[in-house]
Length: 358
Image 1 (spheres, rainbow, N blue to C red):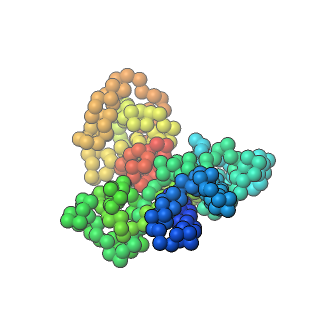
Image 2: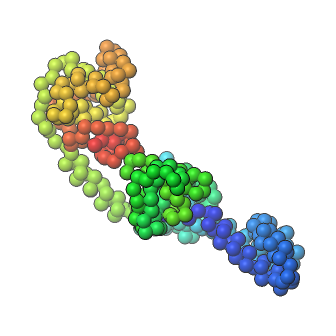
Image 3: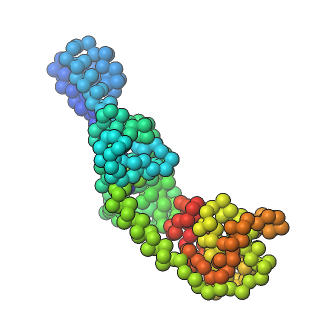
C-alpha cells in the first residue's frame, strides 16, 4: 500500500517557510511592532496564491518562486490512475515500448518526470511511463485518494486506551501498543478517531496517533506472474471432489434456484461456488443435513426468506445454474470447505466474481 502525504501538509510547510520569511523582514522593518508581524504571517497564504499582492520586486520574486514550487509539488508529487480496469506502464514514453507492469483502478504513485503527454511513475516497486490521459494529478489526485483509499492510524503512545465512546470517561475495550495500526472509520471533532477494533467500534485520542492514507500500488510483470502462480496454487487446493450427495430432482432445482438468485449474473465459477457452500453445509454437522433445510434455515439466505427462490423455482431456471447445482451435488467444490459467502469487501476469504467465500 502507498502512503499518501496530504496536500495540507505541503501547504503547511510552505506557509511555515513563508512565515519565517515575513517574520525576518517585518522584524527588520519594525521590530517592536508585533501587529505588523502577525499581519504578515496571516497574509502569507494569500500571497503564495497571489504574488502580485507584494509591492517590492524581490519579495514578489520569492513569492512567485514559492507559488511555482507549490504547483510543481502538486504536478510532480502524487498521482492517481483514472481507469476502469488496468493501465499499462511502459519502459519508455511511447506506446511501442515494452510493458513493465500494470497499475489498476484506484492505484496511486509518485510522479517522477513528465514529458510529451507521458509521466514517469513510481508505485511500489513498479517504475515506468504511463500516458497522462489516464492519470490525475495534484488536488484532483488527492481528492480521489481520500475517496478510495483507506485511512489508518498508528499508535504513538506506549499504551493507549481504546474507548467505547469518544470521551475520556467512556468504558474501555482494551489497550493498543506503540506501533500498532488500525483502520479508521471516521474522525470525530478533530479530537478522536473512530477505529475498527477487533470488529468493534472503538475510539482513540487523535493526540496520540499518526494518521495516514493508504492506496493500492501497481505491480511489475514479475510480481504479476508470482501472484497469478500463487493464486493458481491456492485455487488448486480448493478445487476437488468431496463425494456425491443423493438428491432428488426437486432438490436439485431448488439449489439451482438459490444459485440463480445469489449468483445468476456471475460467471459459472461463481455459481458453482454458491452451490458448493450449500452442499458443504449439508455435509457439515453444524447445519441441517438436507438441501431444503439448509436453504430455508432462519436468517441465512435472504432470497429464500423473501420468496424469490420459490418464484424462480416455479419459473425459469438458467441452464448454467442447473449445471452448477448438479456439479455441486456431485461433490465438486471450488471453494474448499467454505460454508459462508458475502459481497466482496465484507470479509476475508476466496474472491470469486463479486463474492468472497470462507
